[in-house]
Length: 170
Image 1 (cartoon, rainbow, N blue to C red):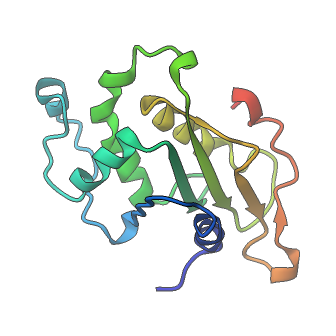
Image 2: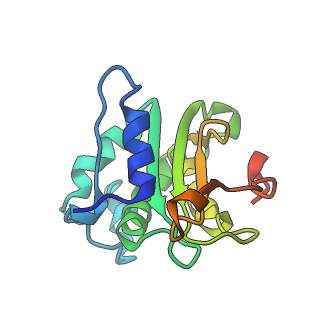
């Protein structure tokens, strides 16, 4: 399987990390989409028994969460979106925590084939709420957002303007 540009950036970053690293590839995992059955309200966890059972413990406990993704039509790839949606089962657990208690962080590696204002905003909105469910804040200083990845490799650049996404303004 050929890796996306965002995944290659992610790989480079992970080589700098010391300690225990667990990496999940939603595109090759058996993760069913959320069915909206609300079984998690009754049981306190997702009632679907699949690959997500491997993902929940690290998501609950990791000091650092890193996510890489190409954007498709300004959104997340569907396998990653399924993983995000299935974390609704964790929402009730952390929904009452004030933002001040969200000390864990996430670093993102995102790529878009073109470049236009606001292109990362929809995916960042989804990830902000997903990570908030886990009591995690996005570290924009460490995160990388690249554009023009469908072009000549010489035209790939850091996304020029994230001012509409930094500091929660998305």
